Image 1: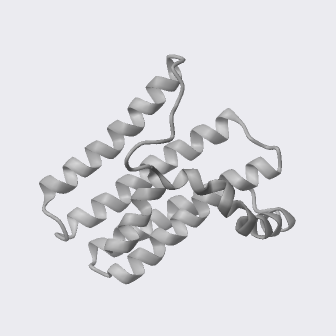
Image 2 (image 1 turned 90 degrees about the vertical axis):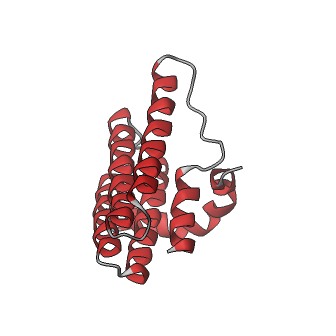
Image 3 (image 1 turned 30 degrees about the horizontal axis):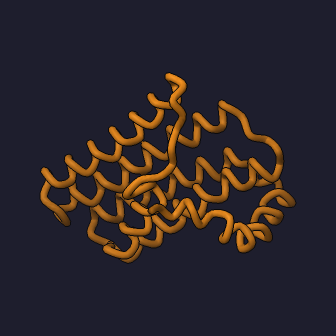
Length: 155
């Protein structure tokens, strides 16, 4: 069970924010890059052991990551290029956040390396399944939204 199944229930809360973004010409790509910047800041803040601020930066990353797709769907501006950018940025965000956590000494480096490998491999296998025509399944034990919430709660 993942948090992705609650997307339709949360949509009502995001709709006013999506309309605000569209009104002020905040594009999906701007939100994607903002998510990347927030994750880089989160990784640095975790590294310097400023966990509360890091968790706040992770929350900004999660918010921008949720908003970019919602804005693209509302603008009917979805594209393969945008989807690729979003997925690539999500992987870099995972790297920044997880590396910041284990490079700080908050967890032993072998645990961090295992976490990083697991996150990247599960994403890679999902995209490979999509590439060979099997289809991508956004389900399982711990999706990206679940990982971000876990980092925020534990952080």
